[in-house]
Length: 158
Image 1 (tube, rainbow, N blue to C red):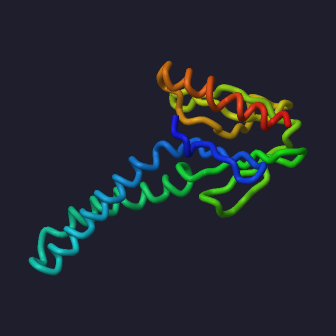
Image 2: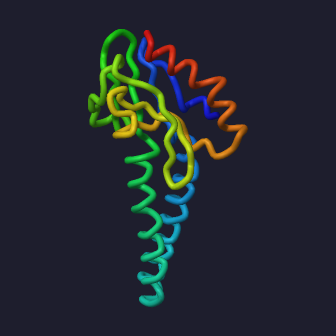
């Protein structure tokens, strides 16, 4: 598990479940920018054959940037005390989600990939918020359950 997936900020625990996918997203953005540069070079130098690299670069860069901002940089704040759990996108737009005493940890799946999430005790099958990366292998699942999940449970109980 990535050590940056979970860190402390004072007494608040900050969980960034999809942090492990940031490197792949950055690679896709770099390749897309290279295609955009190739398209611009071909348009300036030869005035021909620039449409395909420009379209390919745009199709790589824009979705990857959206994924990075709206999925890979999501942070869940689990404070100490009786405060509520909140979420932010990359440190911006902080939004209160659920009270700590109304939270339980559940296992959900998305497209057949399991992950751990927090949900309301009143409606565990309703809206939930991801607190782990996709646990697609037994090794990842074991590491998460041994190292990270007890810290999150302890913070939710405090």
